[in-house]
Length: 129
Image (cartoon, rainbow, N blue to C red; front, side, top):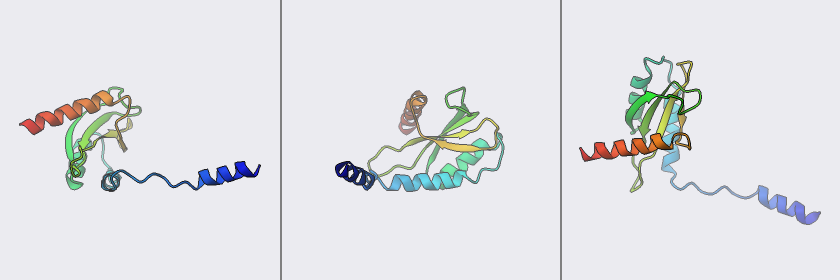
């Protein structure tokens, strides 16, 4: 019985792994705090996201109807967060929820992998121009 209690104590005190790059979480935090300021409607969505992207050093790539790619989402704005030293810029999605007045940040996942690949290709085309 004592051995299992020691194992539990050891497991509960394990430190979380350090983040790979501390700058990315700070940039994400700044982005999320900026997105909290949305008080518009679906007509204001794209202009607001463009402004936020500029303010946090990111880049607005494009916006499109969600078309079922993300649950409870009317429209998706695709952003690229500012580059970090030698690392690729992360692609992020800002979703306008179906009621049209709330937005949230989404990271690419299984359902949006094709959209992420398209966004990365889009960035490649822009960089060649």
